[in-house]
Amino acid sequence: MPLGFETPEIGETAHGRARDLWPVCRSLTGPGVRETLAYLQKILPDLQVHSVRSGTKVFDWTVPKEWHIRSARLTGPDGEVVADFVDNNLHVVGYSVGVDRELSLEELEGHLYSLPEQPDAIPYITSYYKPHWGFCVSQAARDGMKPGMYRAVIDAEHVDGVLNYADLIIPGRTEEEVLISTYVCHPSMANNELSGPVVAAAVAEWIAQQDNHYTYRFVFVPETIGAIAYVHEHLDLLRLRTVAGYVITCIGDDRSYSFLPSREDGTLSDRAGRLALNSVAPDYKTFSFLTRGSDERQYCSPGVDLPIASIMRTKYAEYPEYHTSLDDLTLVTPSGLQGGFEAVAQALAIIDNNRTWQIKRPCEPQLGARGLYPSVSTKNKAQQVRTLLNIVAYADGKLDFIDLCRTIEAPPADVLPLVQKLLEGDVLELVMF
Image (tube, rainbow, N blue to C red; front, side, top):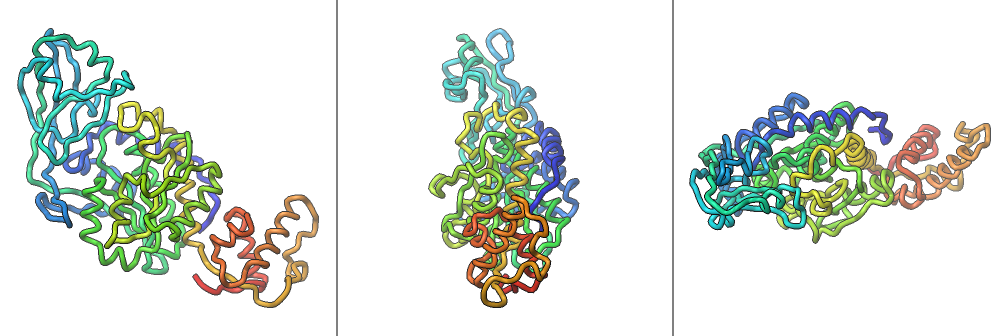
């Protein structure tokens, strides 16, 4: 699997896919999730969609009913439209029960949500596990609401149905697996929702074109309950086969890169993720597992204990547009998505190439006799020779590829081709994969 990427079109393609998925009203269950997964199946034809029936117990949780919403509108005393689901699907509290009633502004207050500190933003609010209804508006719109009678209409229902998730298995030379998980349950938000599935899909397309040592498992689930259901159905297999993996979320803006390690830290995922981000963006930010907030909570939980970390651009809850209508397709950019793809692909390539080598004979090899010493000396060639000799110096059968790169302070994309030359020149031998 290569460590370099000549794929500048991936960001544009991913952004186009995000635009296609933007209008879909996703939630934990229901038509929006199915529509999103059906779209992803067109990109990844081998993606398999699965169902778990409402009411099914999954560990300590119960799969909820499907939420079907058709329309919603809040109108004011003079018939003015205060909020309409057609204009923005964040206007309705996620999972709202149906309602059709008139009530005063005072009565409405308990069903109205806004952000005083962000007057132009519509907040993202949900009430998944307690019956409730509500509307979300900008603070500016709320400040303009005058006393009087308002009509609240939400045409929605909860029905027995299924929770849907999807997975894609790309076989490698071994049954050991790398897990990539992302979620498909939020309505129209670009970084917090759509960046994850479109980057994961792009990575899956790329992985399918490579000669892979590991098998790759891509999972698209509703966050939390979907991951719990997936672990519930696949726990023994996941514990047996998973050697590394990442949750992919908030990976499409241009501001920064972020890394959240697995609960245990120090795993193959953690080491490869840090090395990859150090190559892509040396100023990336590392967060503690104590600040976890996505499905790493399930994959790393005691009793599951998978080595799953998170690679992100700006981490969830660390940017002002998070969980608001301001998290839109101007915040997520083609270049941001491209960078997110490259960070994840680099980490996976490092994992897939992580081997241990050792020198075959004592003392430095004679590089010239093996055609490994450049005939013309330049600054770049001198650095290449130094890296070659550093590889030889530390190829003791103890340091794997990741630790070798870190020890000799060389980028993995530079080290791997030189290792290959040294193998071909009968200088190194493989000790362990």
